[in-house]
Length: 300
Image (tube, rainbow, N blue to C red; front, side, top):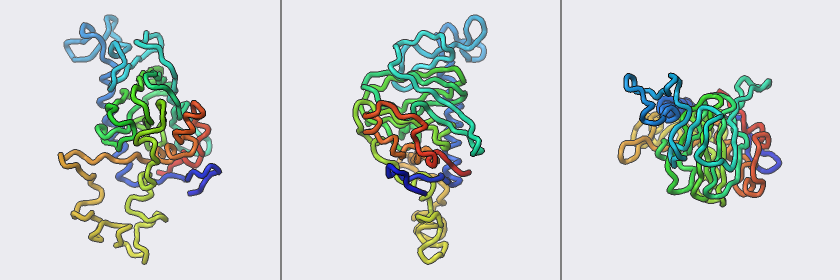
C-alpha cells in the first residue's frame, strides 16, 4: 500500500475466497436474469411456442419498453433504435488489455460524471457483456445510492448495445458492472450534490485486506498466534461469536443474506481521490486515466 500525491491510499487489491464467490455469484445472477429485459418487446412479438421475443423476421427485438423505467431503464441492442428521450450524457463501457498485467482493465469512460436531477445517461457497450448495476441492498450489496432510489440495473448487454437511465434523485450514485466488479469496473455519478451513502468512503476492510486479517494481512493475533480475534472469530476457532463458519454469509432477520460491501478493485477505484464527489462536481467528469494506477490492480 502507498499514498499518492493527493493523499489517497492505493495498492494492489487482494481478496479472499468468499469475496470471489460472492462477486462471481452476483455476475452469474445478472447474466441469467438480466438478458430477459433487453429482449422484451411488444406483446405481439412474443413467440407463444417457446416464450422468447422475436420480431417478424425471426431476429430478437432490438429494444425494451417504451420509456426509461426507474428500475429497468431502457435497453437497445442496436444503434439505430429511437430512444424515448434524448440522452444528456454518454458513458462508454470498455475492456482494454494491458501489456504489463495479465488481467485487462474493465472500466467506464468517463468514470466520474456530474449531472443534474432528471438528466438521462446513455451507457454504450464498446465491448461486450457488461451491466450497469446500483450498489443497493435489494441486490445484495451495501447501499451506495441515495435513499429512496430503487434497485436499478441494466441487463448484461452485448457489444454495440446501449442502456439509458434517468437519475431523478440528487446525491451520489455508485454503480458497477455485475460480472466485473472485482476488477474495478465501477463508475460514480454525482447528481446535483455530494450527498447520501455514496458520498462516504468505503471502509478499507471491504477490499479483502480486513477479512480476518490484521493491518499487515496476517491472520494472527499480536503475539503471532493463529487464534486471536484478528485471525478468527471470538471463539478462536475460525467461527463467529455464534459458532457459525466465517465463510457462511450473515443473514438478516428475515433470512435474506446480509448485504455485502463492494469487493476487489471496486473499493480502491471508488476510494481514489480523483473520484471524490466534490471533485467530480467541480470538474464535470473524471477520466479512467486520472485514477491512480495502483488502485486499478488486483491479484488473484
